[in-house]
Length: 465
Image (tube, rainbow, N blue to C red; front, side, top):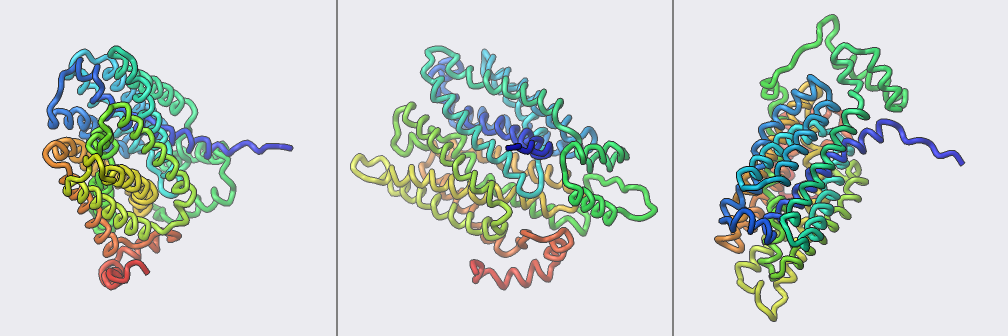
């Protein structure tokens, strides 16, 4: 029996997806680490505002650097961009592991954020392969939460330093592997006048001849005859024919974070503590279980990403998120969660799990695919980088304000995030055309005002048909 070797493009996609592991692991680490006894003993017991700043300090540098990820990929190629970003990320994690005072720890997080924005912005792909990094992000969450669950028993500062040491090592390995084993895309080589290398790369990646010829035909169709290739600048994102695409991608990627998902992931120990799990070990274990659940449901999302409609997935997901998050907020507002005889605490805990499942099946995958695939080729890299910048910025706001909201009100954050999810679902029902199975020309037609305004507005009330 002869086992066929997997094509090189599939192995390259898997390796690229491993970048999501670093992001997920950091997200899973930072929440538990900042409430560990030895971390508090080292840096002091911080206020809710300072706690939010510590956690969120990675995100503004990531937002800024993500704006340049597309430019870096266009100039140096995606493999080099990924490698540079991962290396910078690893340096930041190493500084966090070695921190002797809080300022050094925060500087490490800022450096980590620069690398994170660069390599994650460079990893973006249209289509189902977008879910590869998402699957590895969820695996990173599992790794991060359970690493902290294990190291929390170490009776020294290595209880919180060890997770960052492991993260720095993973980053270095990924950086080297990306530089050595990833190849520049044939499309990038062609755009840079290296057509012979592009042809060789098609064969190296193991892409079938039909796909190769189809891509060549698409490139010839997009090219203007007897003209030199046009250079496109950043402000082309706002030209008349693409600005609607750009605006919708930026809006969606921003509202993805305003659903509060990273508030849940960053501060899961606090959420479970408020729900009645008083011991750190119990809350850490509950965090790990939530990460396993998220990882498990991301697998079918990966398999069926191209079978589910984008629009229905996002609208249904927004409605489901708003219902479960409103339920959590209502139970906290009723002040029955901490009742020793009531079942409200368990309803809250289960609802946290359910909201994470809904997000993982719908918004986590659908938004990233949609934001990339609605862009024309000439602005795709820059537009998706801008959209990810919006994602990082709103992520910063969520990470900064969540502990402040939780310290002043046990339910305010839930009503805020639930309202944002409901608003997004409504706007998507009105303005978001379906892209599943459509070509770029068909997507362009769907964005014309006649379709966008009149037809979708007429579908608001029977939107679930």
